[in-house]
Length: 220
Ligand code: SAH
Image (cartoon, rainbow, N blue to C red; front, side):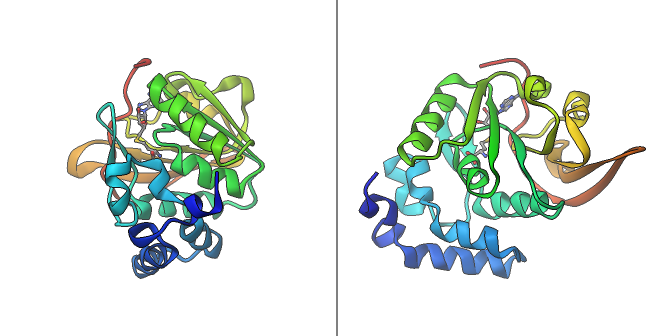
């Protein structure tokens, strides 16, 4: 992919991205690694061309199949929440969607595993990351409720869609000290949670109120 495409212009320029990052700082994102990556990551390449001019607004945007690319603030917040648990080697992402969060994770950790239930979204994300020469991601078409047991345990698991209850198998695929960041519940009662595995069980923290699409059953 050419430098000019990655750099963008006008509404997708570095200047526009800097303004987005300033808004992230204003909303409380502090991790420099996350802020730096958010400024460099070409989010306009993860949405349809017709929406590219809105790619650096702090909005979730449609990506087809009734799904959305997560809001930049939410991607930054979840990534920051994962990184707070110390250095990460292997991370599982549930809900690849556009692949934007996947690309961000792949720039921060050596090995990323990403599971998506809608095959065309998965294939599109795979192509995008290949074009960006990101090679440390393995994709899997599956229902993320089951995690990816063949590659467990993970240092961290990030889920981009909300179940009503925490899937037990995701908790069981964390190593000790590993963290699961996941939205849980629906409507006004949906909360972003972090579960950290301890030698004795799990510690949970409520991070904030959020609005994610539901974690669906089965493959699409
Ligand atoms: N981080 C992605 C978020 C996409 S929205 C992005 O920013 O683009 C959430 C995604 O989770 C959708 O692509 C949806 O298809 C997927 N999803 C929903 N339920 C799922 C399940 N059970 N297993 C795997 N993926 C699921």
